[in-house]
Image (cartoon, rainbow, N blue to C red; front, side, top):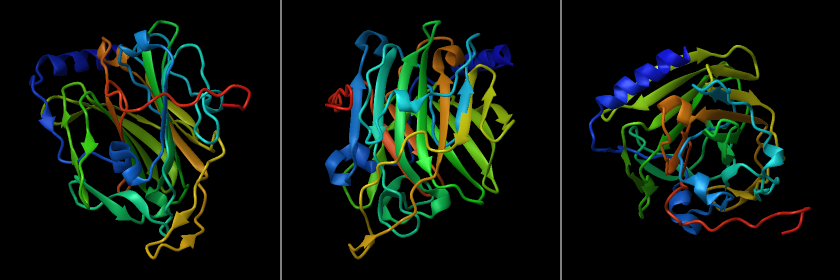
Length: 321
């Protein structure tokens, strides 16, 4: 399977248009793009600037997905070894980047400042999100494996439900960000080789994952994998996707309703994550600059590489900064 996927990807990229295509709608976390104005908090640490120049990605959010075209499979990440509950990064050898994305739970009551409000998902605004489509705090970690491949892990908190829904993880080589305004328009472009992983749930249970690649005009399906159990499943050695309990205690700030009154919302109780070996998938190091995590209603967007917007987070040793 890995060989077939690799050949298909190579063929697609060989015939892809050279120029990027504007994004009809970037996603989630407008706050990621305009920082404090959106009320979000971001932390990032760079451990190895040299390795950072590569560009493989392994994502993890709410459900665990592992995939890699190389012989060494992507494994589920031990998040507690890399992050404190409040989002502070724990330095670990071999880690290239580690980013904490703060997002409040809405659960249909509290105001979320990154809600998609149009069919094309090109605008985000303040609003409420039902628990089944709600995203909490997110975590991204890029590392190199024993073969030198760059892997990205991304995980996100969510609220378990009995609904049919999905969580998408999109990796863009270009910069995707939110411009000023209310609602906030999303701007950017996709480029050939951008990746998208959609993790699906059926009646609340992990159902499977689909892998797509941007061919210059649209996202083209590369492979699909059904969930083989309630926890982690994989697509060869290039992708792993998992669903399970929270790996860290969620640090949630006070939530307010539309009348600016404090409300109590359900805490996140589930975690979906993916891991992607970009070197194994694309056959070469590809550097990504933006990650978008989306549900039918919620969105997180972060331009985290090459931009230099974010300063390294405090280094935490023995619980002290």
